Image (cartoon, rainbow, N blue to C red; front, side):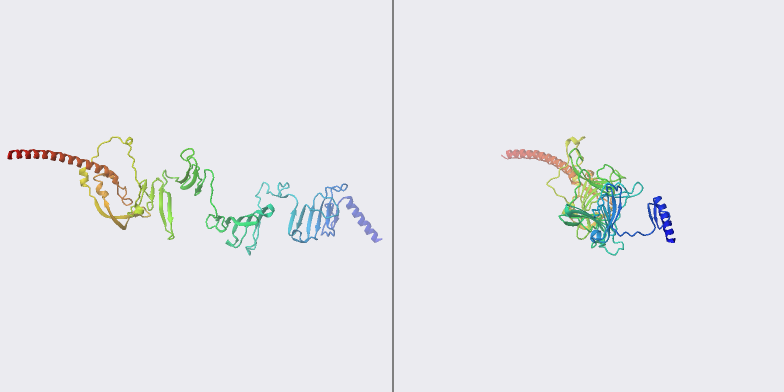
Length: 453
């Protein structure tokens, strides 16, 4: 009788629970249709969620498979089947999950319920969407690297992104490698995370940008800007430099490769452009300097006074130039108020043509003049002497501590010409006097001859 009462009580409790449509196992107050406090042990393989018992469609179920140990890395695998008829046989799942991997037949959304691509990660409207791949968490094996691989054409063509090839820079290189015809090239693009150097075609760049195995092509009218400058933008933003191509520099279809030095503080840039040479001695030697004044100095002349200036050096290959001819502007349309020069034979007679030892000179880092010990024999005039006779032929430096006196020998040509003309006039006058004296002499001689007869 006691047993029956217990059974009857249990039946009443179960009836009440069923009437309430909630079943509790391990609880007297189930919150759902089935509320279990404790573990569930399922001996079968499937758990079905049926939406339509009549037609047996629109059903979802969860199945478990531990037969195929190679699936998703081996071990037991849970399969999620979407909208599948309950046939009692294993069917292709919509998703599979194991402790070692996962498979999804459709789109996967992380942070979104409406994925637009196979994998769609969204952080919504509040934060960043960050995808993190991490390997070698114990910093113990540089062969363990995070890599993203993308392939097509049956794996013959692809791209590899990540950290790989631990033999170089202790695995600190981020790479974008390429794959063609089944062969990987791992140094297509390299970033050394330690030095921040970037390499194209090299796996160990030692500069901020190093290019190996090809050239650089810049299209359009843009080029290279230094110190943060934008090339060919028409803006001077500071003491910077630019290299760019301009297809209409002087006029339409007048194209130039432009080397441009800018200065944000001066009308004429205080620096310039310099071309240097360096040999095995690791000494940098200037070859040509273009200053902000647009003056050009060759070799050691880095602060030219003239539009084009060579060093004060008697060596042929240093301080001398050579050409078939040198033409000087002398158009009559440019010359007014013409008059005879005040110099002539008297001036030439005062000139002091000399032979002397001509010493070479340079300037130091402060621009101060330095006279060398090397010299050679030369002939000419002394500028300081000539300035008092023909000042137009002499360049007088504004600061003798930084610059040299100079003579423009071509300006002596008019002086010498005038002297020759004056001398020739004197000679002609003397010739005329001689002719007159000779005529008188001949007349006297003829008269004497007659008297002697």
